[in-house]
Image (cartoon, rainbow, N blue to C red):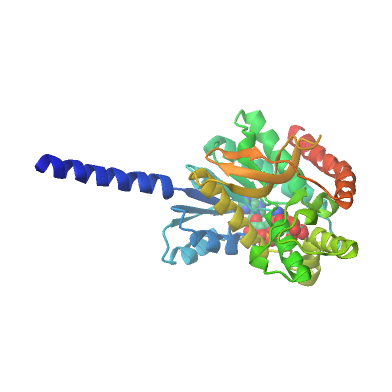
Length: 338
Ligand code: NAD
Ligand code: LMR
C-alpha cells in the first residue's frame, strides 16, 4: 500500500538520519597557529580525517596560502583560512574542537619554560577569544610550556565564567608516541601492538612514562628501563638539538596532535572506550592538573583514570616531579591573574 511504502520510506530515512547524526555528525575543528611548523602538517592530517566537516585554519599570517593548498584535497571537510586577530571570532565560531599550536618553539639550550614569556600572552589572548566565541569547544593545548599554558587557559575561562574542566586538555600524546616507539625498539616487539601510559606533565622529569605497565610485556632490565625513561623525557630536546636552531618537533607533533584530536572527535561522537593520556584538571595527585589516562566522551573528559600500580622507580619519579610541576602550574595561574 501507499501507506506502507510511505512508512518504510520514512523509516529508512530515519535510519539513515540516525546513522549520519550518530556516526558522522558535522564537526568543526579550528587550528590556531595553522601556518606554523606544527600547524601546516596538522592542517593536512586533519583534512584527511573523515570525522571533520569543517576545518578552520587561523594564524596571524600565512593562512590564506595554507588553506588554499589544503582545500584542494578531495576529502570531506570544507576548509577556510582566517588571518589576523580581527578574523579570530569567525575562525572560532561553531567549533567543536580547537587545537592550539600557536607560539614560539625552543632553540638548543632553552627549556620549555624559557618560552613562557612569549607564549603565555599568546595563549591568554586566544583563550579569551575562545571564551567569547565558542565556550563549549574542547581545547587541545599544544603550545609550550604545557605545564603552565593549561592552567593559564583554565584561569582565563574561569574569569569569563565558561570554564568546564572536562573540556580543557594539555596535549601529551607525543610523549606516548615516543615511549611506544622507544619501547618497541628495545623490547623488540611490533610497535603497532605497544601501549605505554605516560603521566605527570610535559617537560623533562615531569614526563613520567610507566614502562612497568607497558604491553606487550618484555623482560627489560633496570638500566634499560632507566635509559628508556630518560630518552622519553628528553625526546623533545633530542629533536631540538638535531634541528640545530630551526625549531622543535613539528612532524611527529602534528601526528600526535591529529591522533589526540581524532580521539576527542570519536568521544564527542559517542564512540565507547576512547582512552588517551592527557594533562587535565585532576585529583589523581595533590596537584590541580596532572596527566594520566582519560576516558573521552560526549562531554570531553568523562573520567580521569588513576595511575595504577607503579614500580619503585616510578614511585620515586613521581615524588621527584611534583615540586617542578607544582611550580609550573602556579606560575601559569599567577600570570593569568595579574
Ligand atoms: P612555529 O614558530 O613554527 O609556528 C608557530 C605559529 O604560531 C606561527 O605560524 C605563528 O605565526 C603562530 N602564532 C604566533 N602568535 C600567534 C597568535 N597570537 N595567534 C595565532 N597564531 C600565532 O612553531 P611550532 O614548531 O609550530 O611550535 C608551536 C608551539 O608548539 C611551540 O610553543 C612549541 O614549543 C610547541 N610544541 C609542543 C609540543 C607538545 O608536545 N605539546 C610538541 C612540539 C611543539
Ligand atoms: C616536544 O616535546 O617535542 C615539544 O614539547 C617541543 C620541545 O620544546 O621539546
